[in-house]
Image (cartoon, rainbow, N blue to C red; front, top):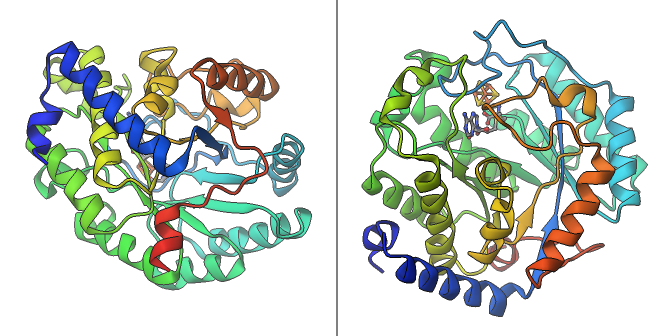
Length: 345
Ligand code: SAM
Ligand code: SF4
């Protein structure tokens, strides 16, 4: 497959044809089903300072928050009542002993509250193998750690040059996650300043070579209070970033028919129907944001994040209709584990 050529398509007819082909693969392998994972952005405290991210530690305009275990369990209850089968616990990156212990205890509480009938996905950044293992043994089954970009040069340009932001460590962490036994998820940002089509093709090859089970990738979107904002003149127009992201999903679906691919919130930021278009290009997972309204405004990774003024009930109702509109169905009460993971185990 000529990945670079497919990613570089400019003709609308060719673009549509690619999308159609990818969707037919998704339809035959996974069906007309969409899996939901409730996303809880439970804390924006972060020790890192990634140049692209609105909640980086250096952004002092952010009001820091952390949900209590009780507040998180309320969201979990709501998710279960809404027939969701799992949640994603996401936060800034911390690694102190208190945090590690808190997460282990929280996983145990969620398991207890849900009779162990709930899939817990973690997205808590870089940790030691020991920590990943602890959390896996406590009952988390999936872990998402985006590599962000597989070009070490580009990685260095979008992160501070220090031990906390080390490309090789991030790579190692992905290995640890797999070694610990998790369904392993990664992904990249698309349309970063300095990024080339060749970089993105390499990203897709990396995902395939690493035998990844789940992918969440979407457009890079700028945030005015971040260092990368200074390079906004170098960015391609958002609509191109959007279309390129859609083609990335489509090409990946053709390369890996049985993995789970998320249609990300960032797609929706550019186009109100962005997630639906992601599904039509071969994605099969949506992560509705269940973070309580009062905290959503403090978890702004990029400007113009969508749905930050919407109550979660409205969010879910609206999603159900939107999914129906494109001829797909939400697979309630279905774990929707990555078929790829089941096959490789
Ligand atoms: N702190 C953890 C980590 O970095 O892995 C998890 C939370 S972090 C906010 C989740 C993801 O947000 C990152 O992996 C990154 O890809 C994405 N992100 C951050 N800033 C972004 C931006 N400006 N545009 C698009 N995605 C962004
Ligand atoms: Fe922290 Fe993750 Fe944002 Fe980096 S991307 S600053 S680790 S929350």
